[in-house]
Structures are given as structure tokens and as C-alpha cells.
Length: 336
Image (cartoon, rainbow, N blue to C red; front, side):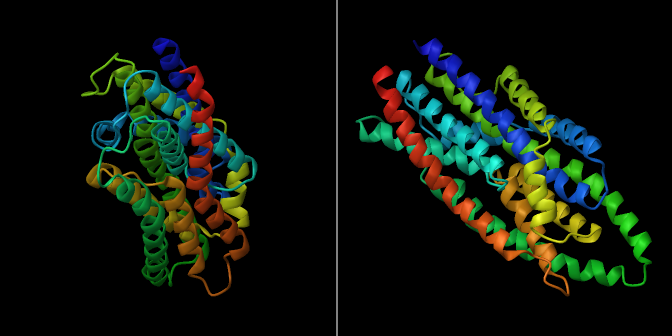
């Protein structure tokens, strides 16, 4: 029974990584394609490569999640919690992709696991939240602070860059910024792989421990390769529905502001993943950076009606996935 449930976790974790790839690839390519810094085909191949590379760089955050933040019960109960959480995250990812709304795969997964864990505790099971600071570091900080910081930094950085470029011919300035965007698209994809690749790794490591197949003190190489490969494979499918929202519907973007958005969001992902070991949403940081850079113009470049719909989706993500996670676990419980 446990081996069957473990196999189910592997399948759904792979599905989550794949959906994460094609859902979030738009964050890396939207501004670069919008400003014609990269062609769509080159952009997705570039992003897929760096997503794979980023996922192979580090496993520190995944180990921290599995060892310090989540205390999963062993056996069918723990595996059932993971299955329910993954199902809710995958379902929400497909739904928001279909609705052309950028949403955080990280918060969808966290919400699903919290909901399924709460349902397990309601039925007399264990509380899966092991770390005292779990809610603060995993939900409140990324959900509330990182978008505000990304918006503010992007808004501020536009000032010195436009001042530096004031005597540069517009054509030359755009060419330089498009070249910079091409580089930063790869940097953002590397940061995305670094951050989001470890979500799938953490889930699989938790599943190995719950099934009694591993002690969880190190990251198996096959887990890292599995997560990196499916994340990259999903990236190759493009996710153009979301790219249209980020690149065209949300903000009127020029190459300079596109480069600012990519640079700020890339730096935040690397700093959060490598230095602070905290999970940051690539969707939240990129979308907020686009809004911040785009808002710093002499005309109303931001379509705030679309932005408000995006914000509402962000708020609903954790609530919706937690509810679905609880429902899925309650449905699975008689079979465990």
C-alpha cells in the first residue's frame, strides 16, 4: 500500500513540476518577448536550459523544508497528505493558466499541504507544521513583503537608469536594454529553477521519509534530476496565455523597464534562495517588478483593472488550495 501511495506522490509531484514549468515560464519570457529582445522559440529554450541548471545548483532550501518546517507523519497518512496537497496545487495551476492569471505555484502547494494537513489533524492525525516560524517564513513573508519590495525597488531603479540614458539615442538605448534583457531572462530562469525546483524536491524527500525509504538527511540525485527535468520540460511548452497578460495586458513595457523588472526579480530570487534560504514566489516578484517599473512613467501605463484581478487571484490562491487540499484528503482518508 505504501509503495503504491509513494508512486502516486512521484507521479503527482512530477505533474506539479511540469505544470510549474509551463505556468511560470511566462515570468521569464514575457517582457523579453514583448520588447522583441528574444524570439519566442529562443526564449523558451533558453529558459528551459537555465531552469534545469538552477534546479541542480542547490538543495539547501528543500532540505530545510523537509527537516525543520514540515513534520510529516509516516505511513499512508503522510503520503495521503502529500497527494491531496499536490492535487490541489496542480488543479489551481491549470485553472489560473486557463484564466490567464499569474499565480504562485509555491503558495498553491503550501496552501494545499496546509489544508490537507489540517484535515488530517481534524480526523485525529498529526499537525504537519513542525517549525514555529513556518507560517511567517513560508506564507506571510513571501505573500506580503516580497511583492511590495519588488515593486518599490523596481520603481526606484528606473530613476537613475533613465537619467544615465538621457543623452543616449533612443534606438541605441533600446538595443542595449534588449541585449541586457536577453541575459537577464536566463538569470531569472536560473533563479526560478533554484527556487521552484526545490519545491518538488522537498515533496519527494518528504514522501521518501514517510514511506520509510530514506532518512531524509540528504537529497538523492535522482530526486534532483527528476525535478529539474520535468521543470525544464514544462518550460518548453511556453505558457503563452500568461505571457500575454504579463507582457501586453498588464503594463505598456519598454526595453529599459523590462530589463529593470527582470533584474530586480532575478536578484531577489537568488538572494532569497542562496543567502536567506527562504522561499520566494517567482510570479509575485516578477509581476510586482513589472508593475513597479511600468508605473514609473509619465503616462498611465499600468492597467490597474487587470492588476486588481491579479491581486485577487493571489489572495485566493492559498484559500482555494487549502480548501481543495482538505476536501481531497477527506475523500482519500477512507482509502488510506
